[in-house]
Image (cartoon, rainbow, N blue to C red; front, side, top):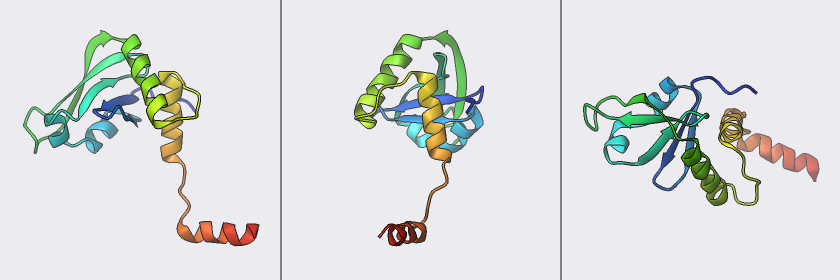
Length: 125
C-alpha cells in the first residue's frame, strides 16, 4: 500500500500515535479543545516535516494544521521508536513511513462483528 502524500503523524501526551491519511482527516478528527489544552505534543509528515497544530479561535473553533517549514527526522524517529516500545510491545520497531502504513492499514481493515466471531468459533469446534 502506498502512503498518501499528505499523511500526518500526531503524537499525544501519552506518546500514543495517531496517523491520518491527510491534513483534512486530521483536522476533522482532532478537537480544538484538546489542542487548546496541549493534548498533542508533536506533528510530522512521514519524512520528518514538522507540523503545527493550532486552535486559533479557542476550544470551540476549528483546528488548523500547517507545515512549520522545518524537518526533524531524528525526533520523529525517536518518537516512533518509543511508540513501538510502549504500544506495540513484542513487535519489531519500524520507521516512520512503515509505521504510518501499518497503522493506516490496521485502521482501514474491516471489523468483524460479534456474530461473525461466534460463527467462526462454532466452525472451528
